[in-house]
Length: 605
Image (cartoon, rainbow, N blue to C red; front, top):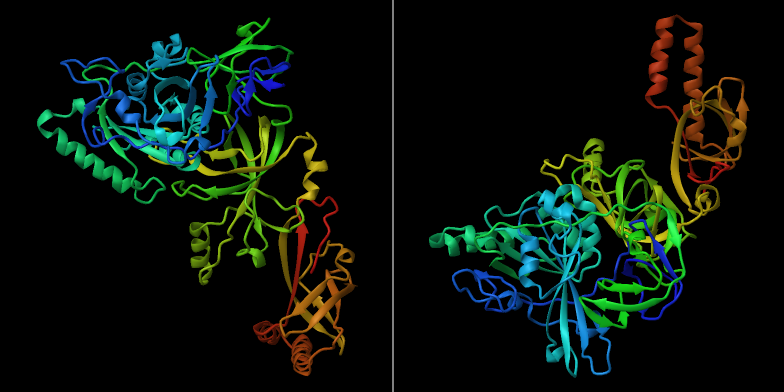
């Protein structure tokens, strides 16, 4: 079996050979399992202190840590990670990844420590860098195990909650987004004395994109005056319910706790920096452990330690584990996307964004496009991109805000929006990822002290481009077009089947490339450009069905007025020009040109 080191993309087994290690921090979006728990009634709404099982809080408070996570898995064991421990009589373990997210200093690491029965080497900010700076710098992993509820399957077993402790500092948003992609359930930790803060809001947005279920934890209730504690908790609970009422998490459980009563928090962990080189070696996976428990099988999102024969672990920082061909290194991608409603401002084509794919964030340039206007209401197949269809180039992502402002300027009625929009992402450096993974676009260079959402859009990666020369080899297949519209005027009549036009082209334009294109007169006649006329940009138009009598009369009168004005004084000529321009017969030329067509052909239906 061939693998990349890090999070499992597909099941990994002990004894597998041919291991590929990536020293770059490559990311992999895990499947989001619709698996969730409900906190017990004893904890929900109560100010219980959370301590490790078996321990007691200062002053004799009973430990309530496990109670927060006990409950039921709504979708049963099929939606979760099942890990078989080594040994013939070992019980099966059902794993659920729980992300611990929130603003910096809200008590996330203290909460993870209080709930955990086992910590990994990356848990609870053990790294020296984290301890030195006093904040969480990277993802921390620990777990809580409890008896498997009967409704989750027959036979003995354990329910394991793997807690993924994410950083809270604004500058570490890349790590937060990466952590959110391997979780089944999110715990949003709120400092009860401060309420929603900037990174709390960003974590909520990330949760809406990457997770289906959430529990809100109101932490640090021990800092509230004892006499007003319950009323303060109820007030903050109502505020959070109001905040969540227009999100997918409306009605989610809200729990009040004190993760570390009476003591300061001490978060932190290392933030390893990878290099962009890829090292391939062939090694044997000798054994695996999950939280000090031997296992023979692991899947996406699992935290495992791997014993590899004849390999120096100092050579590896972070990477991915995968089966052959499941990951691809790409230079550009086509994604389906949605704008994040809290992002202020327009999403402009050619703008640069921080693009997060799995655990990797790179700069990328975007180009937005939509279905052709006639197909705006057409049902779009999910997670499929059709290269046979034509798509309309957009200067910006179409949203209610962008369309309504344009309508106000043009005094137009409301315009329909397409059901689906796409973007072409061009990365400044290659990224390694699977198909159909989550993609998030952000403006991380925004001032972290500004009260604004930095997350701009999210989507699904539909098609990656592995060839460095994708602009020549791949993009010509992408049929995105710009709609071109030119207008000119009829100069005079040649005969019943022809007119001379002007003001459609510049003097230096090569009119020959436009010969044969269809035009339409404002009086209703259809015509065809027949060639140039003179050297000033004028041209001949052939009218196959002939000019209407009214059109011919209108143009003849206008031509006579201009001729008379030419023989008289300047004043009369000016007046004649005004009369002539009052109701000119206009010429419209409409065609489309494909953005990636190297020949720049003009296409008309």
